[in-house]
Amino acid sequence: DVYFIDDIRFLDAGCPVIVEDCDEVEPDLTIINDFDCQQNFSFANPDDVTVVPNPLVSCENRSSSVGRYSDNGTDPFDNTSVDFGAPIDLSVNNQFKIKVLATEAGPFLAKLEGGTAAVEIYADITVLNEWVEYSFDFSGAVGDGNTRIVLFLNATEVDGTAQDIYYIDDLRFEAQ
Image (cartoon, rainbow, N blue to C red; front, side, top):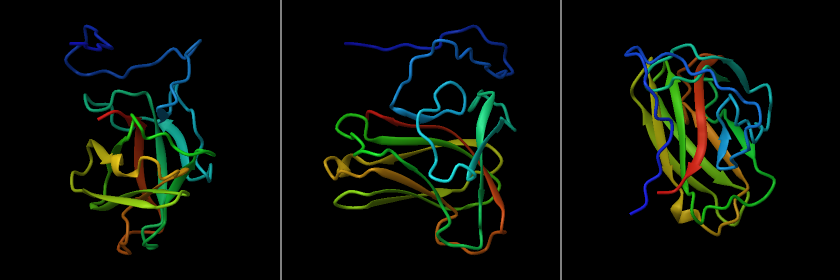
């Protein structure tokens, strides 16, 4: 058996913020953006997501910086996206994961597009005012050649405000 172990530390019980030293950090291209050292891919509209201090440091998310996304909650398909500029290799790392801190419940849609077949997977945001990690299984999209991931927070809904705020962090593709 092979085990990978990382980030073993003695911590105080309060789960304090982790401030990373980004000097000489090698890019890990499975990480889209962690808003700290691994900001490897840009959002299609840079104004969609801004880097801000983590508004709720907790054991679920100890990052010092996160992304602040302003969604038009009156537009059912308002979104933010990342274009990789080339087909996303899902042959091994086909599980898209993201942490979300939301104040509004609703459907959350992650969509791959730009290839031979768009793939949409829904999740429900039901936990509010806490960091929650969502996982989307894109193993069925291997070989489709999709080049973009599009995120619709409050997908298909029109009951929000013109500026619904969501905090996001640790966007990445992992193996199953």
